[in-house]
Length: 296
Image 1: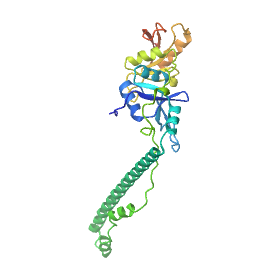
Image 2 (image 1 turned 180 degrees about the vertical axis):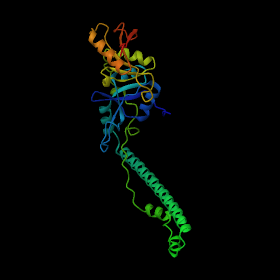
Image 3 (image 1 turned 90 degrees about the horizontal axis):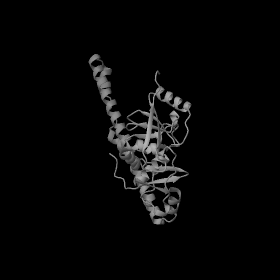
Image 4 (image 1 turned 90 degrees about the vertical axis):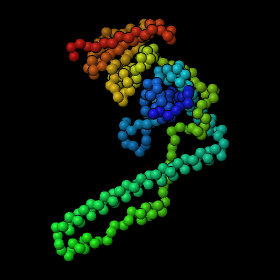
């Protein structure tokens, strides 16, 4: 269940990219508003950085604009807001925040150490049981003097002694790097940091139209289109359409339509074309056409 997220959600505009740094906000938007975005955060020590991606989530301009129009989010100048807030922060607040991170790191280190100790004790318990079972079988098969020596060998060192020894070892504190600057700086920036609505392509009316019908939409570069349309969460469903939106007066060549239809049919999807009837009217009707290639 997604955590309670204060609205509107601040979307940071950094180097021309619309980013969400809060995992709770990203989860909330995915669950409540069918907005997935693209994970782009990487870890330097993870070699396969095309697999292990995380926060922040990058939004398409269409996604960011849709959320602002629904009053769910607002666009802020993330770099300027962060720099100004950090410069005006009191030294005592910085120290207090760093101390809280160190405390959290110690707690994580202690929990990790306790988990390792529990695993070690469990492994020792299983090994002891196997050894006793093996010795019991040997005792039944062999009736020699060596058997008595084996049966009465010194017991294994108690697990408690290992716990005591490990507890005296100095734990190395894990460094905590928060994904967000909250609560160090305010969650909602002042209006002076607010940015205008994102510029969107001519395909935006088609995007908004499909979104209003419950579709999840993601970038369509993989299949050479503008969007991929999913009937539900992309983690659960395959996409149904390759979407291409265009201006009402834009000319489309027959080759583009044929190639799009063949590509869509070849990957078991429909090729969906669409445009706004009146591009100057934000509430204009949207017409869509689905093309499938027969005989494939």
